[in-house]
Image (cartoon, rainbow, N blue to C red; front, side, top):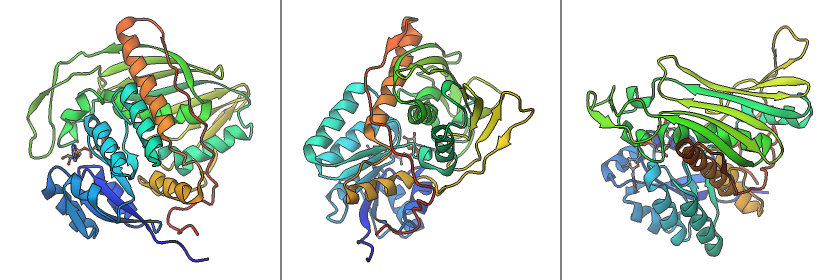
Length: 368
Ligand SMILES: NC(=O)c1ccc[n+]([C@@H]2O[C@H](COP(=O)([O-])OP(=O)(O)OC[C@H]3O[C@@H](n4cnc5c(N)ncnc54)[C@H](O)[C@@H]3O)[C@@H](O)[C@H]2O)c1
């Protein structure tokens, strides 16, 4: 059997993260990037040229491109809903960077529009499809830690204003450590535990402004609109509980900490913001961790686009689904509300658990 023609992809948003996506998407044989677009067309042209993409232009040029079947939305969070909505209206499937939307109503509207138009929406993070997290999932499924009971996650550091050249959006609604990095941690727990039913949280915003630390605008001061310290509790439908910390108010950087405690052992999950890393298991009487070598693909951002394209062609569910992403948006908005109300807030959206990936799955080998 010969492989089908590559699926036509248009990228909208040619900023910092587009470099990783374009490097990978131009090497995965199931997809072909046909156009790179941005409000800033100069940026789009530069990324197209750097990655051998034939065309560059405005978002409308990408939406109107006859070969484009799927839009990869890499714009900043405040633009996600509008760009994804426009792509759906143009009859295109969409892969969106996280968060799916800034609020639940906008997310529900996108899902309904996609359903009506007969197109799919998938959403980052696709790190949950990487070798590290998928190996952790297989370990839990095989009973390696007994029954999973609780999770502990930790993300702390001084914040991204030091390295991102345009960090303002990271301190605006739709970001902060909760909305920017929360999706990695919450998506891992959603994959391992299923949906949550309620959350509680404390939030803090000790500083009103920050200063850009790198790039052409270094030294520029900008405002902080969202909590930069969020400590949350999550109560899952399956009975599991989680304690989560997201902070950009710590001089001490510590990230990628996710531990799942079960009745028989504790599992240290690799960094949820990475595709690789080996899980570690420690049973009650162990004096040290046992490292379990990760098996599977660790090809990087864009992996979820390939899974989505293969699922569309096979008539199967894609794994990094908009339903799971909407649940994560609801958890984050409920966490933010709880930080203001000091009460537990309910979480009502649900999703179908994504099927595990086979250890042999490889985005670099074209699917038949
Ligand atoms: N930077 C990272 O390390 C990183 C990592 C993972 C995910 N992400 C996610 O990727 C997304 C983009 O982040 P970034 O760091 O690349 O931001 P960025 O500011 O560097 O780039 C965003 C680009 O989107 C363009 N844009 C904004 N609104 C638009 C619109 N309506 N139509 C077309 N183009 C528009 C901007 O002109 C800009 O070029 C965010 O959702 C972020 O959470 C970023």
